[in-house]
Amino acid sequence: MTVIGAGAAGLSLAVRLARPLSGAGPAPRVVVVEAPPGALRPPTRTWCFWETGAGPYDGLLTASWNRLRLYAPDGAVIDRPLGSARYKMLRSDRFGTAMTGRLGAYGVDLRLMTVESARDAGDGAVVHGSDVSGAPSVVRSRLVFDSRQPQRLPAARTTLLQHFRGWFVRTAEPAFDPDAATLMDFRLTQPPRGLAFGYVLPLNRYEALVEYTEFSRSVLDEAAYERALHHYCTSVLGLGDYTVGEREQGIIPMSDGAYPRRDGHRVHFIGAAGGATRPSTGYTFSAIQRQSHHLAEAVRAGRSPARAPAVHGRRARGMDAVLLRALDTGRIDGGAFFCHLFASVPIERVLRFLDGATSPVEDFGIGLRTPVLPMLRSLLELPLLRRTVPALGPGRY
Image (cartoon, rainbow, N blue to C red; front, top):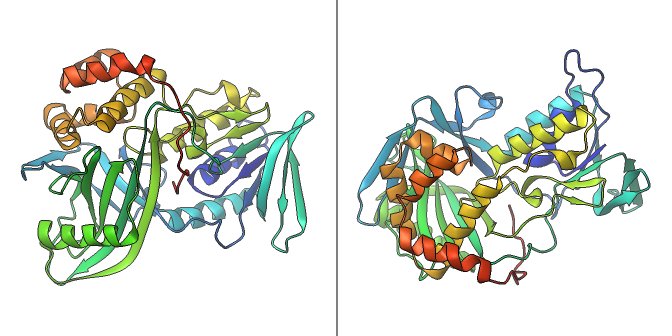
């Protein structure tokens, strides 16, 4: 079988498919197709997720934290210890090197190829493209798992963009608490609709990844992100003398549209292209791990990958649709919403809620801690709204 893409989704699935399992018979033969170095390769990026106890990637982490903080618009601090959980930071280059090494040890074939199409062909599937020299290249296999970004976003009632720019900063004096990550800092000027916040991931007392993030309909130009970050670092965080090293930037669609899980019978979508991104938060990495587990389990059991569970359940997607509508219409204050959620609900339950792992009873209780009337109005009008294809590109995610 063929996995297209060597990002988080492609590598996570390929490793699960190819690794030998005791008593499970031989692993399926896997080919990973990666774009040659150039414009099609994404830049190094940062993935964050929460996890209880030790995890399979702990040896690759850049940092982790045992507390999360939020700052309300008025400066009030919500500081929550995570107990047995940790908020973890993983860099894509380190992850890629480690997973590529594992695939090499498993005998997986890694090919450099610019993919042009992947489609059903008889009782299998065929991937067409070109190799590094530009010559036509074809890969045939029983199944294809495609992580490439879709050419357009799905039809939706609401589509916002989570867009951000981050600086890796180093200060002259100690400025950061290495035990606590600032998940959302709302001490910033807010857009007319949606929300804006700062995000701080300390690496030590002198270094951190500092990001400016918006949930809104349109992105900013580069100068605007730079101004926002400078203001946040100097006027809000009060960093004093600091230098900026590496920069990160990205766009994550936040949509209540339904991403197709496959194209035909043999080509299956994975990662963000397969709906792994949680619409209300933009988090993707943990969902990719669940998706990879379910898909590999289905393949090894001889079942169709189409029968694997959806990575986000219908109830979670429905709640996300209501929240996105309420944010997009300006009916709720995003900063007040998230701050009240973290302040009034036990952190363990909040994290399970954001992962879509809470029960209906827990979801109802959390719903009562939200602005009920604006959320109810958004819920009731959703069936009346027409789904349209957003007139924007999928961005980098």
